[in-house]
Every structure is written in structure tokens, then in C-alpha cells.
Image (cartoon, rainbow, N blue to C red; front, side):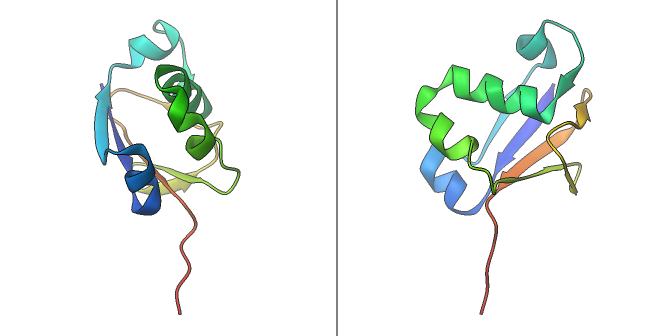
Length: 87
């Protein structure tokens, strides 16, 4: 089981701030990456596709920013967030 978190405007766009997903649901027990998780979430809810496929979307696994090719393991925390600007 992994915990998936959504932050900032992404949380508002998707209508949720978190969810729990069994890794076996994504790839049937095969190795799963952040990109696989995004594809799975888009398939589960087609409305989410335009928000999750945004090229500037950041992902973090266990609070470390990572590329989409990063492998996931049980008990990981995966967070998605848009770029943040300040001023």
C-alpha cells in the first residue's frame, strides 16, 4: 500500500488531498514507477488526466523530489505538486 498526496492547486483540481493504493492494483505485482502510478490514476479518473499529465508537475517519493522513472515500493509516500512561485 502506498499513500498518494496532492498539494496546492492540484489538490483543488482533483477534489482530494490524498488516497491509498495497493501497488498490485497498478501493475499486477510487477515493478511500478511514478509514471505507472500517474497512468493508473488517469485511467481511474479521466477528468484527472489533464492535471496529472502537466509537464511541470513535480513528484516526490518519501519527501524527495524524483523523476517519473523512480520505482515505488510498499509503504512509500508519493506526493504530486505543481511548481510554486513566490514573491
